[in-house]
Length: 170
Length: 433
Image (cartoon, rainbow over the protein chains, first blue to last red):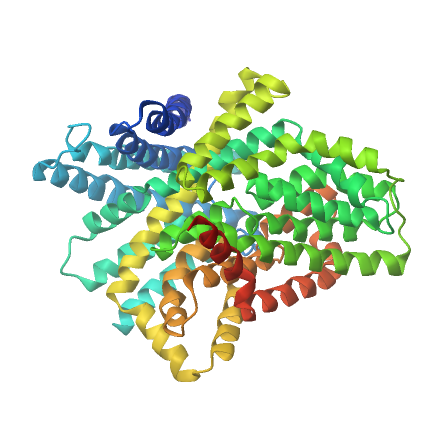
């Protein structure tokens, strides 16, 4: 039970952190794109880095937001058929789903994302206007993968604990 | 080849059946298929496609339109639009039905979300119509179906998604192409609703006067101006769709926070956060679907589907009908964004081979999938509508049938009269020259 408490604490902390960063990124995005338009008309030539910054932040907010939405179980799914199962089977099914999400996060996002990040870094590409290495665009993929894996484990532990509680009551 | 396609399709269907998030279904199915193909670094390919898919400046318009939609929704836009629509069309027999459809068209366009239109407009209109003696299931049915018109009337996020997946399709063209079809669906829904109201003898709301129409219109103008600003910016070549969406955020902020003061500054973080979540949901789908399109292209699935369709018939009318039937079935159990992401790459080659413009096909696709938003087992609008109207799907279904017929008739018109979609974009272009 205490393990679960620790995990839930970690999740809540991470969710807060992700929420704050998502809001900040979103505000920066709006300001950045507006500055792009403004600079084009007010100064006469568009600031070169606005589109690069916007694209990087869009990747970041997509993946951070994706793991945040998963932490709060907000992703689209088809719950019609599962709804017809009995409660025990539903819980078992839910554990299986989180297991699949966790495995996908580990394989595609953490492992694959790390390969993507390190290969792009190794290629030595840089972003023309910002002058930083292009690989940093993708660092968010493995990081969000870690978050997603953690959330999957926490969801599963929570579901397992629920079952133990019910058995104790019986 | 066949084995790999089977892996892709079966994995996807099984995972979807057991309620794995659809984005992850797509991701896992693609992952396993790439693994089966072999010879490539599977994890790297999937991660690269996912990140590459969301690395797109045009897609940035989606979160921005969502934010401005939320702001306008929180800022009392629904009430102003309803007041205006009541003054304009509420006085006649069955008037509240027309008010409902007209408000949904305006609100759906500005908010860009059918779900938001159902909850905001339905939240006002369904109880009001109940009070005036309109049948509860009728009220929910008309709200759900009318709310989908906002996806055809610009600005529309699902059109941006389509433009990005289809490639080489201009968002500006799509936006203009959707205007007439959106109005046609709305008018067909009004006719269906009007006939029912007339048969049942539902009354009007209240008498109106030109003065009342004028005052309510003046109140609604600042909300409607958002559409004008966005379209003028894009069509006038002043800025890209993404930039126009950012401007719409600025406009909505100034209007609702500083002028109307209906949105408090302290509410903004929460509002931004909900837009991040909606965006992330769409973007994860886009990322995973990009991986799937790569797999499908590698397996020549689009070419094979295209060849199979063209082998069945070389008649444009028949093929479009087949595609429409398939999409209607898909729409019943799949939400709009994943369906657009998955089926655009599959059908587009066949359709363009027959000389149908990708812009026209985009409008057909969206008009078709709009029907699916109101059908069980998966129908976002229907679910929200039943929640707002405090009724059940089983009770609403019989009342939905006339509206489904109206939507189907307009879908057929949109499919077989290309002019409806292609005339406005051409007209706008001719002005530009």
